[in-house]
Image (cartoon, rainbow, N blue to C red; front, side):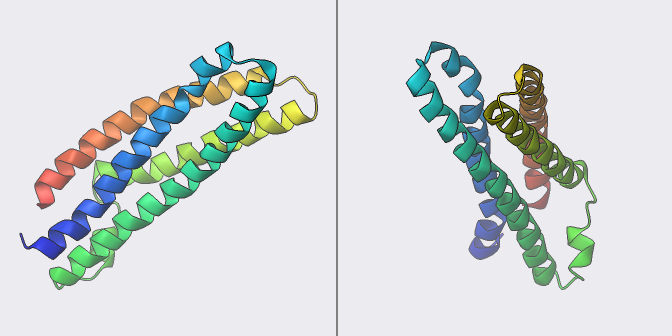
Length: 155
């Protein structure tokens, strides 16, 4: 395969690996928060929320990169672009499911934060947010493996 097509195709996996690393790092908040003092907890919580917002945006960007790479592949193969961007494998379908789950995770985090700021009970929301994060972590590992197999198929 030529250099430019290879680079374009690898942009998505490299960005995705960076996103996965950031997501797993973000999940460590659950363990860290137990050992923080009250002032440090507020600062760390603000960083957690800010990082969560960035992760949501990065998720959308990584998916857009995947779509653009598929359009580029279609152009190289002189095929209609829609044949490449339609989810036609488990990895592509899983990416859309991942976006849905990430949106649910992001919204549950904001719901938890809102309940906390309004001095309402937020422990159930916080636990739900954590469980969704656990499910996402498992899903991400499966999705990355399927992406690796798909990458081997197209390269």
